[in-house]
Length: 402
Image (tube, rainbow, N blue to C red; front, side):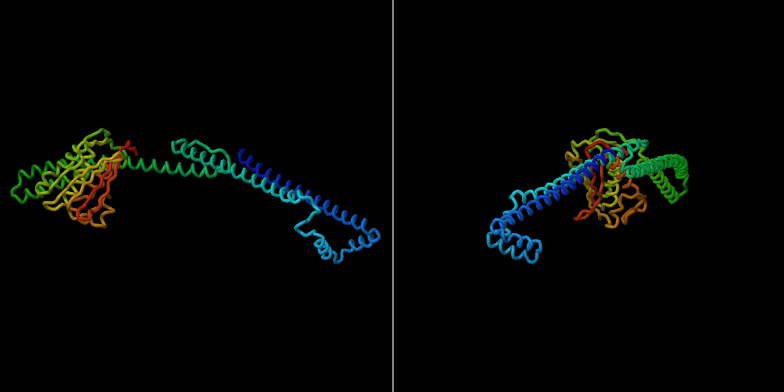
């Protein structure tokens, strides 16, 4: 408030000074003009009085009447060399002063406006810094912070209300996620017990089965029970990732060792289909993160590639390291993705056109959540020559907690 009054006083003083200078300049110019005009008339009257004293009375009477004298006077002045470009009645400095004083007044006014504008810019900069600090304090949880009473207090109040509202909504969302994770944990625990009982009962029934057809039906039921248990576990993991309560280790591990661990469950399936598999460029590269969960994420991606690669096809993993990130490219020689599926591949419960009937549509979603939690990104695309490609990048910086 004090700075604002100071700036207003500066502008008012500058304008007042400029007005005073203009009035003073006008008065001085008017006085000088009257003085020099009267002096010129006196000189002319004196010259007539000396040259023709007997005609002086008539000349003065004619001058007072002023009828048609201007044109004749201009003609006489031109005859004797007193044109408009050579006006010798006024001194040379008179014209300079007549222009210099108003010019100085304008300069003073412009200078005053310049000072006022500079002051306003500094005031706006201070205000921006104050609002920024105010916002930072609120974001840190200092809700009792108050702005000083000035012209921007309304803006400060609006920022305060908006930030508090956003924080409250964020906290409510976080609590909702934590509640969801707790509910999923309870549900998982409640489902595991009957699923285990069903599995045990099916095992006993399989031993007592009377014919081969009944045994096959029981085996299929066991597979469905196992699939249900896996689905429940995956949903529990996703809910924990969303709530930020899943503990991930941050240890250095060998990239090649992790990839070998991820592909191990699918080696037999690849051998049966005659798929050629290879890992390139992973030797000597280390990553920082959770070995087990990274293996889980890559295993889901590799599983997708194995399912969509035809017999005697190819699956390759190529690793590249640079100072910013480590890139792992996984690609297969299958039919690729449907263009309509590409934007939705990592959405939960989304099943693309080529998905198997047993797919629940959460494997790739789980991989994406884990990789992002490990400070990475994953994208999918089609290869121009045919096949699908996954690009995973792990950035070399500290993990950002959420």
